[in-house]
Length: 428
Image (cartoon, rainbow, N blue to C red; front, side):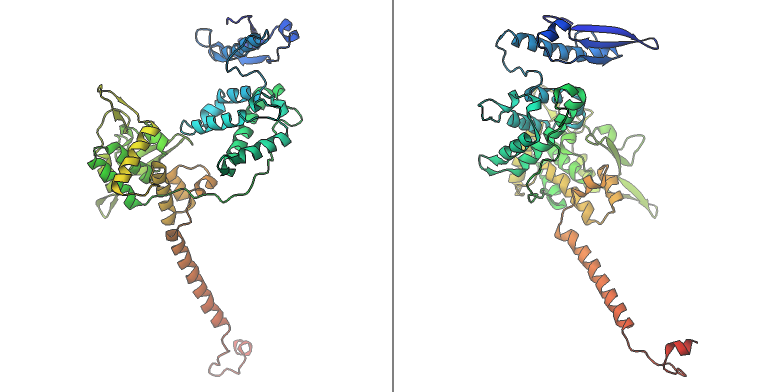
């Protein structure tokens, strides 16, 4: 690993017969004020240093060392995050496995925007929050950042404050684990316990089945079958829009040789794989369960392994970006007279709402949606009139039954032939 000056890369025997790799800052640089921590890099050389010895975790640590060395003599360096600052914390968080595995490509731009929002907040001293040391963010400082974020240029924005608290709490937790010396040991996570303002949460838009198929057939007529199929997939099979566009639904998933009567949906966010049955047999007759959806899917040209692909002018294909598909959906919905709330995300929410209106149990709904927890599934339950009607009818039926039972209990004692007038004597 070449740095200027070099950090030490140490290989030591680890029983039984293995080798452990370590990154170590020489003592002379410690005495010069270098705070980059020493770190074990594990037993795998590729993970520690990359395939050719110039990558891996050691490269990232050497990069931090290079930055420290350049800044020490006062050399101006653009956009360098000094070790131990808020800028550095967010950079390390974005490089962590948690960020890579837990944050989807669809939401990363929002995460980037929130990080920049926090880092670019001005302090009373005139510098940026991002330039401040991590240890300077106390619980009181976290409260002030939250309050400052909630005051937007166009009025209150409590939702942005909630997002910032959740993001910072997660980032501090990751850095505390990876770099325990960089945070305050007394209060390792100042974002725990931040009191947030209560707000009325907006309900996400959910389109109806009729609107989905109006859009799908209109898209086919307009020469955009991929857009129509994407809307149907989100509604009927509940796949997230970013997964549909990223190619997580492939042609081999649709009526494959192993499962000729099913469609396989891979939910990348949760890792769940759901098989949706496409047909069943009733009284010896084959019944298509998703005939309308399959009629749309069969109109999509097979341009590659992925089902939803864009044809380029040079004859090649590539996935749609979220922005490209959003533009197509927006133009088509306006042409078809559909509401402005019609989006692929609203199609999926419409499908989730239909599960609730169909009065599926929690287990049945999650078997189709791929949600791992009841809490996550319940978040999509819309308080719609269609869903409230059966509940009201059930409640009314219960009230009627209860009223009838009460009236019988309160009836006067009716005499029976040869009865003396007292039920207990007659029974005796």
